[in-house]
Length: 94
Image (tube, rainbow, N blue to C red):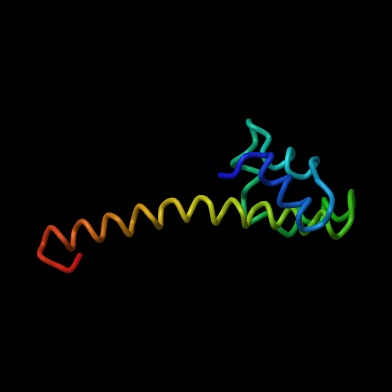
């Protein structure tokens, strides 16, 4: 997943603000898995909205989306390579 500095750079590009508090909260080493839980996105976004405003809540969601793309993108590439290898092995097209 993207490092903290990349998430902060994305926020700055989108909003002109770092939203460091949001990104550091999500990526807290010991609580990372719990804080990336999509089933809690509404309540967590509301927490950020109350603390920092609507834009911070959106940046929380954007952080999750960036992580989702990074994580699944890595596995999608791997999956496509595996499928291509299987097809080639069994005489399919390259």
